[in-house]
Image (cartoon, rainbow, N blue to C red; front, side, top):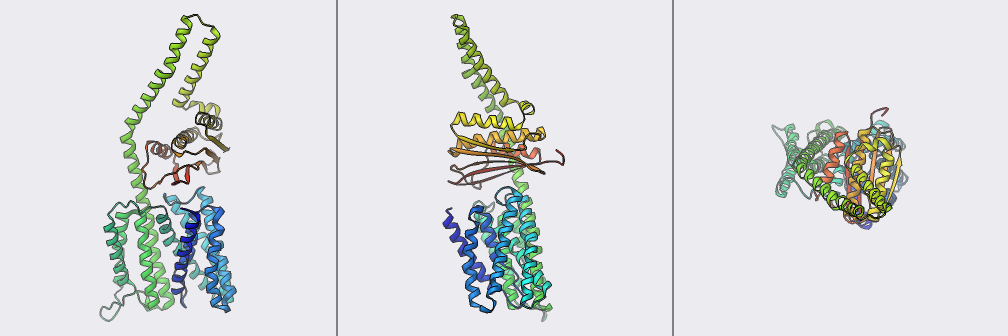
Length: 491
């Protein structure tokens, strides 16, 4: 997707989110503030070099509202600066912590998003915002928790949905589209009954209706995974805020302020557990599928490797031995025979290195990886740039794992990407080792193309050492392979 199209979609989404947020804001505060979620989602989906464009694109929308209320103009500008800084800081810390773009493909990514984007940074921002509210003669602590909960809920509900939509996680649902439509329709009716609808039972509101959306949430978790589950709190929140604005719902008896807080807590306890459970179940499902795929392809891979070695021994080394034998029989110069022997020795050494890992322990991962990059560059006429910091000294099993992953990733890059330049980065951090292979080739859709045996074997190698593999690829924009292995203290 072009940068212009991304920014245009962001602008439309931000306008809609801001209009909805302002319509849902009243004297008791804003139960949710979705513009921040739209801005953070846009930043996470693009490169840091273009983040300033999204902030600049959001400013005119905020100015329109600020000019409409001249008495609060500078406060509105202050709130915008606070919102922009919060989104930028959240995006930076999330990307820095993960060491790669956030695609919500793993539970770890979700945990980082929630801790950084929905708890840590909003807490800092709420403190600043509450200080601004003091100038508007509002109590500090009321403004603080209202701002914090509204921002945190918006990030928790809408950012996962934005990322799932952007990365095409709805393209291949495990259940039919018709079932997804039925789920959305049923959840909408249940949410309407639970919140905007003034149901009476013996002259009083029936609190049991608040549980009406819960079965649909369970349905989404069981049948649609994280992407489908992310829809449920978004739909519920629309009806819940509608009910708050109408003074309806299960918490109206306690006044407007507590009604807002009750709805917020309800959304929190619906959103957080359902999202976590759906992500954990999805990871388990993908691991089981990967293990089944590995089990089914293991014998095939072994036979393919045996045939490859057999062909190399017969067609290359065997032919050279035959030529050497003929040269000796014909009494040719020993210098020529020595050259044949040296070439054979080099080929056998190369073959033994492919089959055995022990040389990494002798020469170190840094040297072995550099030699492999040079070999790939020479054989395929591709520029391979290696940046390495602190690779030597890693535990041998980790070093071997990362070396094999780098081998497979480079093979895939030169075979499929069509790129003329590939970058390899291996960095040892205090708590992990991070390997990154990037190309700017043709790319592919990671959501529509299943893992081949190469990707599956990389994932399996990393699982053995407690690591993880994340593939970030876009058609016509290249591929990034991120391998991360945790390191024990002192290792």
